[in-house]
Structures are given as structure tokens and as C-alpha cells.
Length: 239
Image (cartoon, rainbow, N blue to C red; front, side):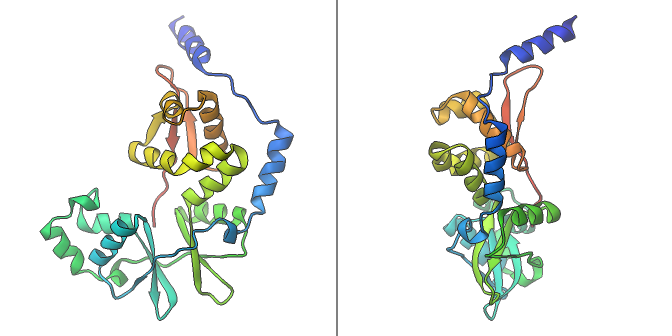
């Protein structure tokens, strides 16, 4: 009897979704699959040299507010390093925790010792190829090369989020997407009501956005037996 009550309570709380007609959704889905990497990528690319140290990489991450660094040798892409790699090497959870001893450790390690073999994509590739590579190799970013194999950009999960949200949800969420992502990355999960209040939109809009992102392996909407539904980011391993 109590289980039935819990189920009814959960169903009662769940808001009705203003759904996108399926045929329109599929049309839009097929449309965004054809978007080229060149139209989604971040064109201002910050790079580092393989002979630089992890401490120098840490400084770039802080100064430029980025999480991934393509590593170069004679203008050729030879590796990729992430902020997570630097944090693990230093044994800290945040770069703000670096003290004199941790700084000394990072200064003694060359990027070439820690960088990973780069998995890249060409600027003429389509969105579905980006998703396929990120899912296959469990990564969050891809350096972008032109036909001469020169680095011309970088594409990340946030770039995908912006493209998808702009296509399906509209201008308001598109302009707020960076902040939404930051909140989810810091908290792991946030209730739909809290996000709705933060961005001054209806909970149904946040919920619909979450369900669309579920189809793209970016986030999920959770409906607990007790408590309010929440949006949870799907965290992937970082290369």
C-alpha cells in the first residue's frame, strides 16, 4: 500500500512536459547532425609546447579559464593534456590549492611526460562524428585540424551543448548554457525548481531541455521516489 502511495506521489509531482512534436523533433535532429565542426568549434585555440612544465600548463588553465590544452611540437599536434591530468599529478582537487611544495612538483614534470596521444577531428566533419568519437573514446574535447593538419580550433562538450540547446530550446537557454554547465559541473546535480528560479523560466522548460540532453548523453533528468526531480550531468572520463 505504501509503495502505491509513493508511486502516486511521484507521478503527481512530475510536471507535464510541453513536448516538441516528434516529426519536428526528428527533422531538427537530422538537421543538427549535418552541422559542420567548423561552425561549432572554439576558434581561439590556446596551445602549449611539449617541453613546457605542468606548472606552466596549470598557469594557462587558470589564466585562460580552459580545461584542455593541445600540445605542439614544431607547429604539429603531438598530444593533449587536461586540467584533470595536472590536478592528479599535484594530488589536489583544485588549482587554487597549489602550495609551494605542489608547485615545485609540477615544475619538475614536463608536459611530454604526462600528455596523451591526441584524438582529433577535421573541421569539415559533422556533429554526429564528434559525438561518436567522444562516446567511443570517453573524452570531453577534440582538437580540430584543417586539411593541412594544422590546429584551427577545439571542440568540447560545452560546444555541443550550445549547439543542441540553441537548435531545440531557443535563445534564453543558449545564452545561459555556460552558467548552467558550470553549476552542474560544480554540484553534480541541481533540482529542476532551483534551475528554473536561477534562470527565471518555467520548470517544464528546464525539464524539456534535460530530456533533450539525455538523448545526446550530456545530462539526465532524475525522478526520485522522494524529493524533487533534478538535472544531473553525465560525467565522462577526461583525457
